[in-house]
Image (cartoon, rainbow, N blue to C red; front, side, top):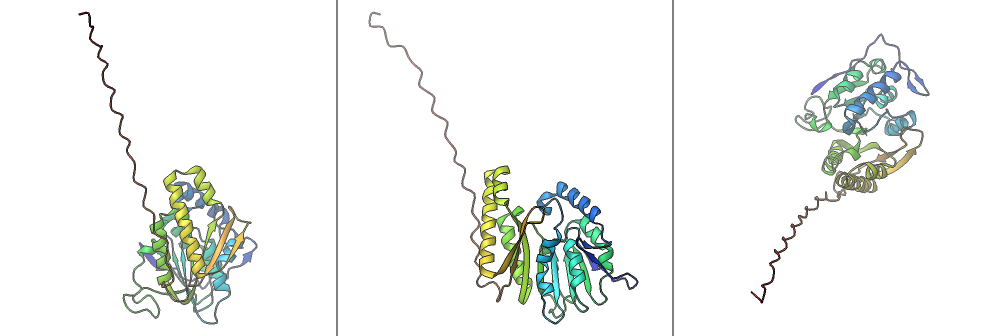
Length: 284
C-alpha cells in the first residue's frame, strides 16, 4: 500500500469544465486505460468505460448540497478519476478528500492528473493505493480522530462494483462504510441496470444465486437508510445512483444471512443385475 498527499501546484491554472467534464484531463486516454484494465481485471473494475457526466453529478450530490463548513470526503474505487476530478472542482478551501484506489495503474494516473494538481488552494487531497478494507487507523492523519481510531467522513462516494463481489464481502463493505461515516454523513454509490438478467444468462447457477443475494442485501440497505435514487439512462450502461444517510449507526441494519451452498447430492450407482443362470434341465 502507498499513501501520500497529492500536492497542489500554486502555478497551475484553475480547472475548467465543459459538458464532458474537466478540461485538461485525458478523456481518450482514460477510456483506453479503463478498457484495458476492465479486460484484465473485470471482477474489480466492473465496467468497460468510466462513468458519464450525468452519473458523476448524481454521485457528488452530497458535496454540492453541503453544509456551510469544511467537510471530509472519502472516494472508494476512483478508477481513472472522473468522479475525483469533479469532487476536486466543487470542494472548498478547508475541505479534505481521501481517494482510495487499489488498482496500481489507476492510482498512477491519479497521481499525474493535472486537474487534481490544479485544485483550489487549501483543499487537502490524499491518495491511498490499497483496498478500503486495508486502510490503517487514522491516528495523527485523521483530523479530530483519537490515536488508533478510524477516520470519519462526512461523505463517502463508492465506485465499487458490488454485484461482482461475494455477499459476505459486500456486507463487510457496507458495515465498514457505516463505521467510517460521521454522524449525519451521507453515502452514494451506483449500480448498473439489468445486471441480474445478464448474470443469469451468462453465469452459472452458483454465481447467479450470489448475485441475487447481493441484490437483496443492497435493497435492504437502501430501504433502511435511503434518501433517494436517480436513474441515469445516458450512461454506458444505464445506471441508478443511490443516496443514503445512516442516522445512528448500524442498529437498524440487519442484512439477510448469506446462503450456504446446497450440499451436493451423490447418486449411488445402480447395483449390477444378477447373472442369469440357466435353469437346470430336468431330463439330465
